[in-house]
Image: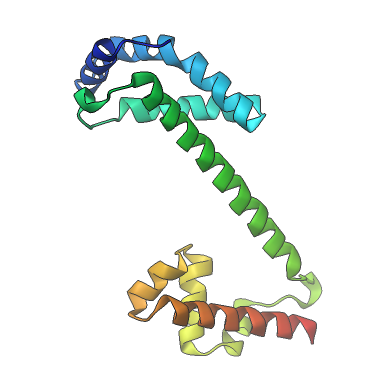
Length: 170
C-alpha cells in the first residue's frame, strides 16, 4: 500500500511549487515499486530502471489538479503501465525499422547517391521522401503540410520505395 490520498495530493502540490523534499518522499514511496513492476513486465533490469525514472519525472512535471486523483497507487500503476507500453512501442518500431532496412539490399560499390535517387523521382516524390525519410515526419504530417490526403502521400511514398527497389534489382 502506498501513500494515503491526502498525503499523495499534498506531495504533488508541493512538487508543483518546486519543493524537492516532496520529490524525496515520492521517490522513497514509489520508485522501487515502479522499478520492480516495470522490470517484471519488460524482463530487463535496466529498462525497468529507465521506466521508473520516467515515471518519477512525469510525476514531477504533473500539472493537473492533484485533488482529482482518487487512487494514488492506481494513478502511479497506470503511469507505469503507460511508460512500459511506450518502451514496447519503441522497441517494436525499432525492430520494424531494422527489418525494413534489411529488405533493401545495399551494395556499397554500386550504391545510390542522392543525385541518383532524385533523378529517379518526380518533384512530389522527392518532397515526400525528404520530409519523411530525412526529416523524420510522419506521413500524416507530410500530408497535412502538403495539403493532400494521407492516402495520396502513402501512395507516393510506396511508389518511391518501389522505384528504389526496382533500381537496385536491375
